[in-house]
Length: 441
Picture 1: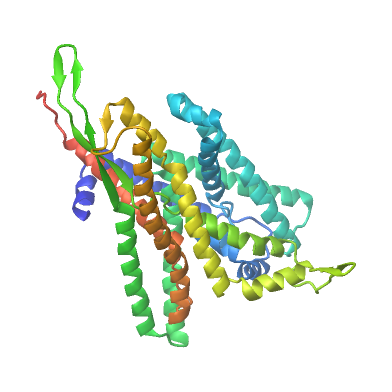
Picture 2: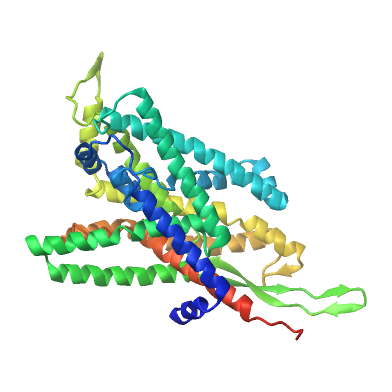
């Protein structure tokens, strides 16, 4: 990998693209330090400490949320919009027809829908966050005009990151949005290292636990690489074809079924559902309210404070019930999303149209049943793996007493996946450059 990277830096075109990506990273870091004015930093830090949902968003934004910059929301609204559009493409026949038969124009139209949905989600998220901040005393200026200014600033920051990601995709190497998330995660690690060093200097630290934590983290990264790159290759035989007076012999190929087709999406779905109720209660300030009950005859309706107390006691991220629900949700969403992105019926129809078949399996419904059985086994393995990956890092950190170094399953999957995808694209560009073809000039 390092040899390919060194060789890529010697190619002017690839070196220019890598330079553009690094320049975009520099712009991203600059935007982190452009803060929204009139902010009570102490009140904002207290709000961050009380909200796990904010910490999750802040981790993906490279610390922009902690600084409350104009890109505080990061690229999250665009990610949510892309996921929703992908799911809607499967649900709505019109979008499915547009994606399959619309060609380049259809894909551009879906991209436009995704951008408009991004704006809508960004406005909703920015409005909710701004109102919560004003009610919590984060803003010195509580007028409606400053609230509108904060909403416009955060929405504009998200749209700028969306544009920057598209520029990276066109003029750089790799997927621009994924690389923005990648650099946002990487930027947080120096802070964790400095916090760990400062804690060791002040009160001491369990170095054995820290070394064990690093070793397990490296093993986890290796397993993620295996799961990301692993695939089941289903052999495919193409029948002989007669074109005019010529007969073409059949060819052998394969269908690659990825071991982890869901990627990181199932974990993002699960953690969003788990953190949303607690964050919604904190937005309405019910966590510190006195327990007031509504009496309806013999029934007693629990108040918001009672619900918040229950969630904090039995459903906080450190409890067994939370981790069990987290594991089960990841497993369920892994099966769901895999069935969305892998359509075995379409694969069977495409094989039949091209005159190909799986050896020993009849075309049509038997092929669909065979592919579904293989997909079920692969998904079962990946679902259990992702579920364990989701709950083990936090459990490991608490067991070893490592409180200053956050190592989330989502961040590990994103960092490893984006790094592998970028290196694959660099290798593909090198292969295209070195390929000379059959005609010599």
